[in-house]
Image (cartoon, rainbow, N blue to C red; front, side, top):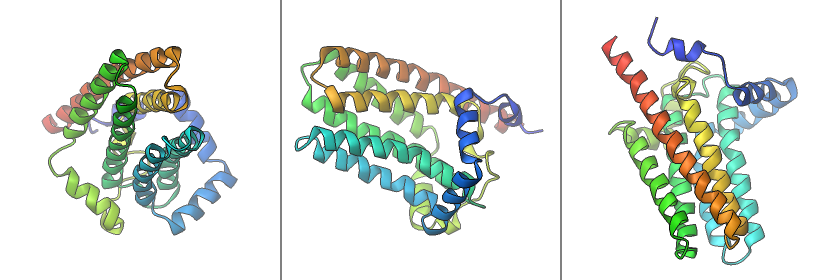
Length: 233
């Protein structure tokens, strides 16, 4: 038995069970498979970076358009994983690395833009800087070859290393902290896009980013613990 198995066999969190129930619905599953026939899950992941850039560019022009664009981009974060899980051979080691990289680089772009628009809000700026810094540290721990893996995931997905559905990087229970963290962080960003001038929203977003930073530390420590156990075995 590998060290990762106890993490994978542990009870799934409620929101993961809900996600799986939706994806296993025959009609939803058929739609996801159809999407996967025409668009590789890795390309859906990569498109999210463009979505964040579009949201940032639209912000000075139309707050509503910016909020809508970022909301759709956040929703696509579920779609890429759902397509991968619903397609034979869709889940890959490189795809998992690409997904987390896009999560972090996208939110770093969004937070940098928001901070530049609200420099006077010191506590929010500090929370955003902490969040981005921890994201960089967390991603760096995925190894020095990840840029090559990311490039392969985008430009040569057919050459990626296939993993059994649900048992890749995202199958490790420690990664649940990362999923929750990204949900909280994205909610904070969406709130600031929508009402960044509201003092209550600024306070709520600051608290949300602080909480997401704490989850980042916990998740990274747990993931590295699993990795060390595997290396020892």
